[in-house]
Amino acid sequence: MTHTGQRRGHGGPVSEYFNQVWTPSKEEQTAVTNNQQKHFNLTFKVHYKTDFGESLQVVGSIEELGAWKDYKCPMTWSEGHIWVSETMSITSCSHFMYKYVVMHQERAVKWERGPNRIADLMILPELSRT
Image (tube, rainbow, N blue to C red; front, side):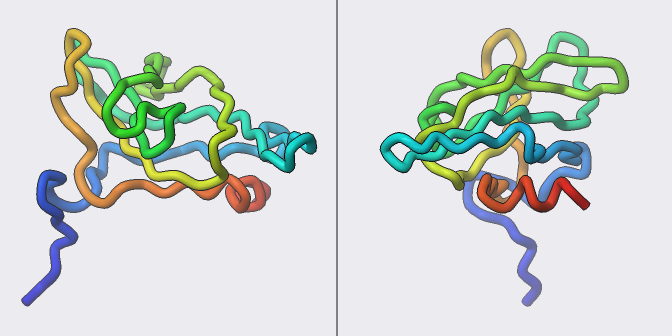
């Protein structure tokens, strides 16, 4: 038996259309020393060709990304079908899960398929230096 990576409610493997092209740079990560709480400034950027009238949102496991139930992180289309979120401040934790969602008339019409993406903000800045 071959495992296809499918999970109930999420469909098949991660869509090839969702090729993430951005990770936070070292300059975008800052530490807040009071209360030993970390503070990260994060921008999402992804290449995806939508149909006319569609847009993208990021939704995820942390409150800043809607805790899987609200759409709090809209993205803006730019040349070359690159979608970019506004820079957001993440203070709730340094790691979380997220997905991209296709929206039409403020309704979710397609969730990214496959396993959830995982962001670990403590190591991503190191990866962006290579």
